[in-house]
Length: 530
Image 1 (cartoon, rainbow, N blue to C red):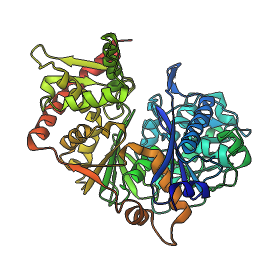
Image 2 (image 1 turned 135 degrees about the horizontal axis):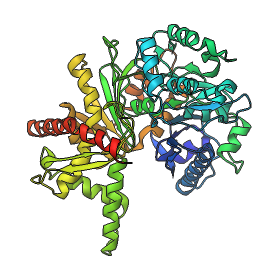
Image 3 (image 1 turned 90 degrees about the vertical axis):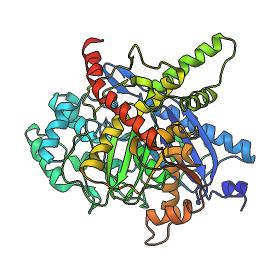
Image 4 (image 1 turned 45 degrees about the horizontal axis):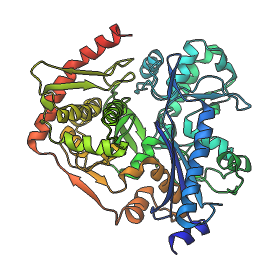
């Protein structure tokens, strides 16, 4: 079948991912070939000290994103998109969406970016003897309890963003195990919330006499390939108000952006890893066994099929880089020579390769928000240099690219140096890796290992959730997700692998010395600058 016939017949997988700065939809065939796409840009807001999105904007963004996809199908193939074979929803992990029995929102949507849960996270970590990061949904829930918020008594559901959207479209209150592992600790043998810890939490809050328990309000956990419901008439109308999209389309379990990043890079088997670079930056290493002890800097989550994963997660990724590139674009416009955004990134990233291996003594922190790995509750973007530093444009850009990996590298040091974790392959994906050779080379220098970037790296998590949807639809009996991806999707896909040389690795080590020493400067800025 040619592409037009595939789309017209509905033998396709639709993946929609709600990322931090973009909602993206990808339509693929069941072998992972991208047939059409659509996107909608949005941005979080800091309201009353809380990083949030209005849920009305979530719905509007999804409609616009799907409309852009439908328009792309019409332009490419000259047909109206009436149905697809299967759908998957993905979104930013963690956070807190609380609703009552009628589905009404009870409190502001708190995203992963919030660090206003330090007390709750510390108490739960001690209780469970298991690291509960500030971002996790159970930390948000318990902090609301500790703060005595009135809405907690009325809670009927607590969701991540993907679970909330999935329920609107299907009526099913379920969640993929990868995303669920960022709500509450998972028993990787049973592929479900850890029952011992569920009971400990129940006992912890017993004195409040709430009319609910944790299993009632958290989504049911599903693994990759399981049935997660179908598109309802109401859901079809939400996604496509024109009434063209037909209900009844099956869904795969909704997942978080970490899980879809693993799938999009084929990093779902033990000893593989990937690094996703966006508004946040996180490295995921699939483990052969559990870690020997608790590390407050490391999240323990799972792959979409339930393998244990160690995550080094930095809240602050490319936002500050994006702001600087916009500043340079503004200057270019003043000169009468405006530069398109994509071209500006390409030019500046490539020019950074001419910088010194240690960035010439420049230092930056792109901390727009707090950073768990470096134990900061708030952030202040900073750029610092000595009087004798080599202050060039190449070093300036290289510094901001290096620093985006700084906090993640500190987490990875714990895994590789303290736990002896072995990595056979590390794959990079996300917009930062679109410019060949730059971010890929710097990541290799940071980890001292080869880094691969697939040709599909720019497709990101929307493509990853489309692959999970395809797996739900056409896997063979007993076929694992790992086998499906290896044998059906990535077998013939190409990419580039790069290893930084010894001088580059030594330069990054020098930069990291400055980065660690300069955290005191960042902390002082948080304390003194409003």
